[in-house]
Length: 115
Length: 317
Image (cartoon, rainbow over all chains, first blue to last red; front, side, top):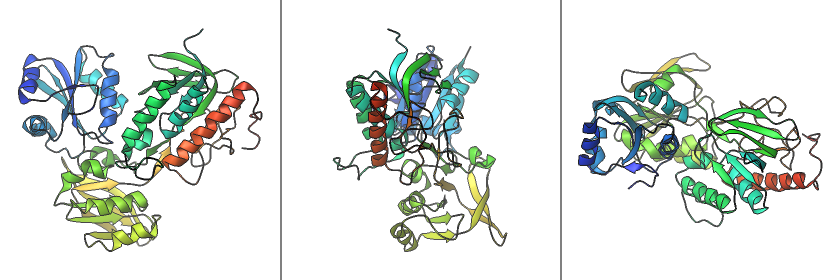
């Protein structure tokens, strides 16, 4: 399990239930590495500013990642950790590869997940 | 008491800033650390730290977490991911504006903003970030197992990471802008004897090619003008760091490289403003030297506030 302050997605069932719920959520799929830790930190920091968005993480090397995030068409060309995927209304609305700044994450949240 | 007023504000939460905070808070000065990223700074980019005295082996991120916990245990407040606004450093009371947090004031400020990895600044570089271009071999090396890749740079990081990437890649082409390397001779030798590594020297990188993913890096030989195209699916960029000093007021004197000028007591050109760590003009940049800077800056700031120190006129800077 990742040592972050985010909620963890640990099973495919949990992931599918989240998608099917139609909720707005962002998943950071990575390891406890130098490019991933700052993104977990950014997401944790933004929780209070985006109360209607759920921020979660997923361990890149766990089976759940191989069955879900890593299999998405949106992440097929990715080769930099973490993979960050944003969902809304059961759809992927944005996806990024590699480290992102707080500003970059906010721009996506504002553009894709704000009402 | 104004909850936004502190004795000292430390700008930066890397080893220099956190060390300063530990010393300041332990001296019972109210201390606020504002970090625009994740605490730990560039330590977070170091997978293994094996030369920090007293610690046999750790990761940079773990070391940063311990330093932050130490600072907080002594009473310092640490805000990470802070979005800084206006800095007013010239008067006896300094102020720092932070989005969503308001304006903080202090009688002394320690600048420890650190550095950021230098990028090539090419449009195509941004386009392929995370789709072939990476800045972290330990993070992304395994995506390129059995593939041909490039490393750009000629310092220790570039040469050491090139060798490390041969664990995964079929071949590693090192592209470097000069005809010699800045890396230590032993690092160069390790790369030279590795059969998977080849060198292209005196190259100016001109761009990256591909559709969804990177397929090639292009360059031009600096002397002959010969165009070079290297087919690769991955490129790792290790071309040094730039100091994060762009937002500092003009009263803080910088070198032409943007590094903060200080004297040996870490005093800048502005009274009551000190600097520490990688953003300071100096020769060596290690976690240990950052810790040293932070210690000196904190002690000097403490003396400045107590009125016992040498007046921080900045004349010697």
